[in-house]
Length: 351
Image 1 (spheres, rainbow, N blue to C red):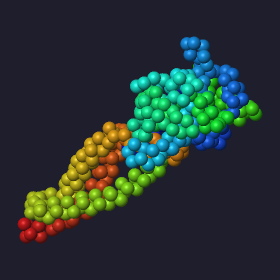
Image 2: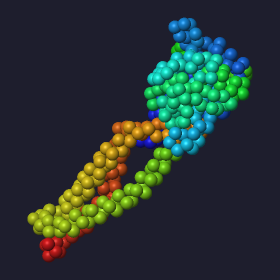
Image 3: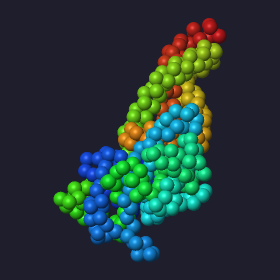
Image 4: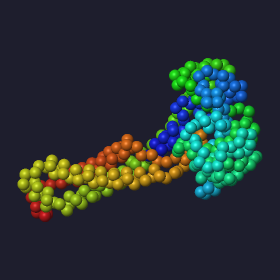
């Protein structure tokens, strides 16, 4: 659920029609650099969509990391600061202002994602942040529908570049007028000696950003599950041994009236599987409550804070119940085998 929550958060960050360009070999936005000359060339590429006012939907954006103290404990953590514009907001329709207003171009005003506003000191509406030797006034809070943008701070691109003393953008994002034109744009960006940039669908880019962290958490979670499952198997075995010991007389009676050893074996195995299934359902119900909790961690790809929620999917639910049944089978097989191998005379004598 944790790894799926991270993956879903970052994949949902990208727009299906958006293309993101960054320097070849750059694994993240903070490692990329696109000069102003290259950005100007990109604005003339064919296939870029326009809005109702006839403006090409393309946004040149510097992206930097900034260290801010967290509200919870005062310890510093990295937050992504993105320079953008009104067109950048238009490229991301999932981003909606929920409080305050949009920052004014050419000013030291910023807007904060919902998670960043609640997670970092000075990032709430009306507060002031100090970084890049400037004071930045938070004039708005936006919600991006539980995507990665919720953990970011946005301000005017030109002001961000001036404040951080940068002369190059990190990425260029634009919307395709026709999705089928992506391959031609990708080829043009890669082969043009003036560009030498890599173009990716924005959805694909953010999916790749989640891979390292999601894989690590998946492996860690599986390792912990295996370790704890050993205790669960031992518990199931003890429970079933106790059940066999209390029903020795019943076992002898069943065998005396004609029930085969296999029938006794199956009966106790089914009881163990039923108990494990009930335990799996209860555990799954308790875990599903975690979906309402917001947590944050550091993304290995960007080294910035990422807020997300646990996500329960049908596949995860099926895997959980299958794992619970497996533990019930392993823990119940030996007691069931012992019950099936007991002699009728010994059972009746002990009863």
